Image (cartoon, rainbow over the protein chains, first blue to last red):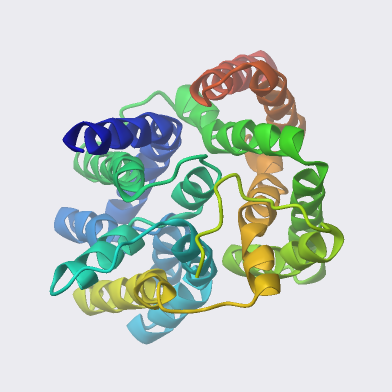
Length: 245
Length: 100
């Protein structure tokens, strides 16, 4: 049992490496920008430590610089991060969380939930054998990369040369593509749903220029998945078996 | 004011992430909802890739597209995502340098 947990966790860490490569330069950029915006080192670190949501952390800096109130920034964060609610709903069907008595019943969902980001969500849900230790390994790798990047950026500056950092900006997109391809090979409908999601996100950003990026994803998730569910006949999209309710 | 803001941001980010996992186990969902949920990751992938990939290098959308195409080709063969990712970074850095 011990060995399986350790092996699962290690698989999660490995799956998290591309995420870490993508997070590191972004987090450094956040750290640099945060201190330039007037946050202290501790405040920048606390943001990545406790909030841990890239897009909204950057947005908060922009809003702060624009003189927005704390309440407005908190509301903007809620709006921007609502997509994680949908992702958590989908993950809750995939992660077999055993019902445990007492404190563990709360601790496991809270720990796993905190680790949900766009990237950990797609990596975890498209993994054939998703288990809690796998997700912990994946989420910890991503979290540590985000946190250490922030500390480096806020403490020193972006240590990575600008041209390399810009190049590393493609990492997450490449990872998304690399995990999409096997799914499309498995069932064409998965590719169709992804194309629908991309078109909706693009269309939404063109139609409503000021739309927060989080809502592009919310719209794409809700509508494109419905297209898939309606068109998919009896196929199951998820690689893992559906936990019987 | 900044600390208050961070505390608020923490709450409104944490709760939506955790509440479904806390309740999820006890929810019995109809079949069509489960099918709908099962497509969420693919729909999210589409929206995460596009149009964002056009903005990897500001003002030169084709660099992101070229790197993405390279990642896609490698992903057809590779078992791990890390090789397509490293190759895409290399392509982006080279194309970025050539242009400047």
